[in-house]
Length: 149
Image (cartoon, rainbow, N blue to C red; front, side, top):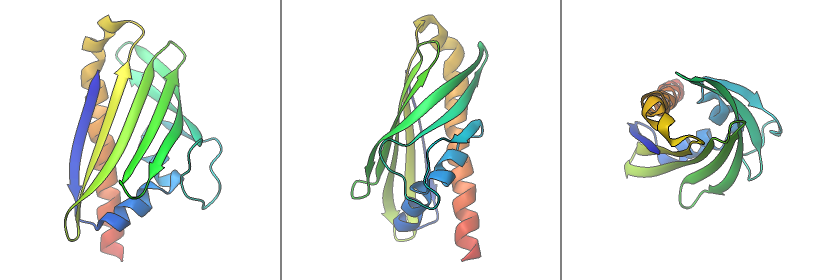
């Protein structure tokens, strides 16, 4: 089940990328994150980093262990893989594209595989809302950052 959302933020591509490759900022995009497990203080996001987050759904909560699998500055993308205890799997991709000078589109896509496909109907709405909420938190944070500079 693919869940996708896009927002355009009033910030240059480089500022958006710098924000996204700060592991502590990326983890904060998920309101339910329990935090980084192996993030180097002040270091950039790197392949192999791992954190935990809690996915709250109408059928219960589940801890997801998420790993960074790709960081490509030239393409403006970050890829993530997450596994839950019940067999849930999430492949995530964050992609940024400069729209015009000072405006950047940010796309967040999560491909979710469920152990029981029948749950897709129950989870599509909450997963879509969570994806859109994460992008809104990013947009708010980036606006605040650009206004303070």
